[in-house]
Image (cartoon, rainbow, N blue to C red; front, side, top):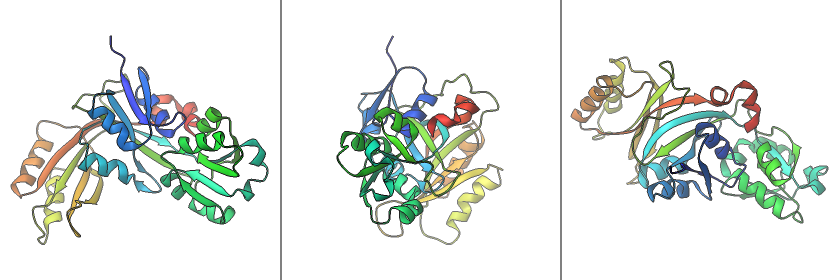
Length: 299
């Protein structure tokens, strides 16, 4: 029997690896250097699926994920997990006590943005160096103990690379959570023992307007409203074909069915809109899949 391979943004110790382990408890997890690399691996059949960060409660959409997914590597959204995120300042032992004198801070752009005020208040002179992930920042700092540097990452990375947590919970807002999405090459029904008739589902759609006319967006939203379909998220993204050209990503709070979603799609296409179903999938919280005591594990 073939072992299921799941790609994630590595190296080991990343938030994405923790999310992948929660969603897919069996099989092999394979780290990749960048988010596009993880999706390419699925398309090229190197792995069976990939877990990628999609949205953060503080910084919003992870643009590299959504843009690469839409414009370069279209696949299926198969499941979602929302996980708590706590960022810590990690250092080698020699710099832990005097962390306020750190010269350089390494981390992923999203993590740096989540800790903007902390860096401004306590490390205003430190140089910021961006890495492909928080775990790769921790890995780099651990491999270069001679450098007066720190990483912004989680406690898993601290344990994985033998770093000290010089300062805990440095993200600017307490309720920091990230949505991670499981991507598959083909549309599948996600098989998990915790999927029940009460499990929350989303159906994600990409909608492009036919032309720039008054009330176009209103007509799109009305197609959902009169059917009483709850939209849990609406986001506009540039089509990259010129200034002012946008499409919309819409999350409907329901599972793909045989009546409502197909009729919405038909109505929107009749209006001249482009409509693509990107996935219909179950949504979990970290606490649901791991138990409430395990909520600390990703921090």
